[in-house]
Image (tube, rainbow, N blue to C red; front, side, top):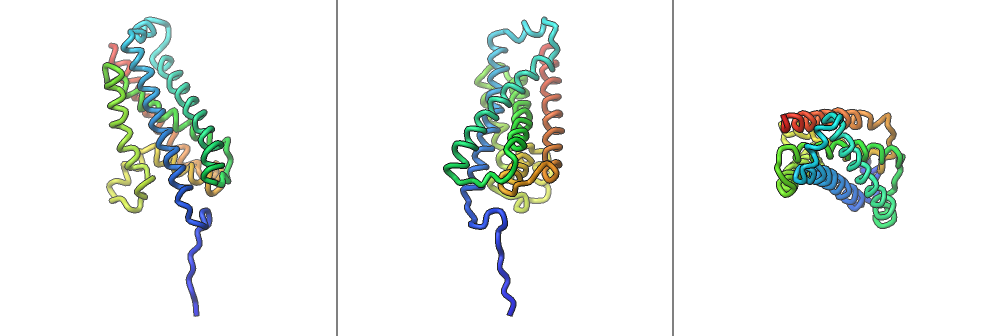
Length: 214
């Protein structure tokens, strides 16, 4: 007699807290990166300091790049506190993989999300409008990230949207690193896709910023 038994390799007790805690952390990373960068640029537009920067020798990429990097570093600092102070001690997350690799991926994703916030600030006039547009961008990113609904449960035509969703690749890399102990050799495709999407999003934000003041 043959009896089939299934066993989960990386979460043998089927502890849903591991998955939900990582998902909630990723949601907060996304929301903060978008809102902080959008607020930083929108506030400068309200105060009129953007025009002063434009008449300086700085180019539009040099104006926006420090904002994206600064917001990414702020977000990764909060992520460090969450992972080391909450996910590990409270939710008993195993943290099997390389934490430096995970934080490096988080910096890249934070920069990518900051590009969305900078874009939101370029198409709005004030801080309140930028915040509302940032929330509008945040909702579909979460819905098509795979946190609550796996890719396998979505219609085929939605897989294209998931492919261009940076959060879906960040979630995949985060699960692989923290739960499976995967290295860069296993998550390089997600990291590369995030890098390409981040470059494209930031480039589009720079183009929109330049067009706004022409």
